[in-house]
Image (cartoon, rainbow, N blue to C red; front, side, top):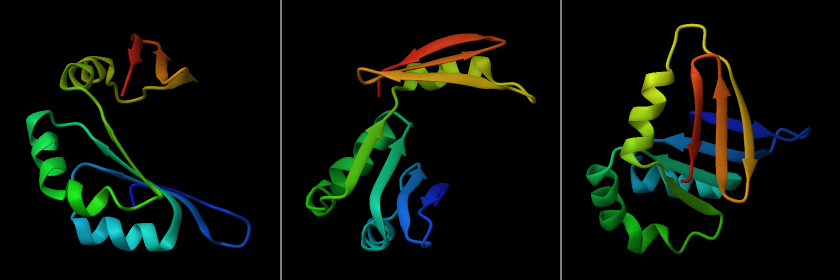
Length: 108
């Protein structure tokens, strides 16, 4: 995974993958973790990935797929910096990122 969280026993609580993983990899992750999150961010390509894999992945109860809009990805890129730091506020399905270079509201 790109990011994961384990409990004190070593069990994987949360498995987070970015991009468009292979369906078999997502199924394997769902078998190993309590919660699996796939974050897509590439517009039409992400939509095609979902259409190709939706029938198999929609049956997995512990899977969440989140798509970040292409315009939001471009706005995030504008905030990118070598030593960037963000504060994040997550409320009512919106994420507010605040940093030195500005802020951005994301609604995945």
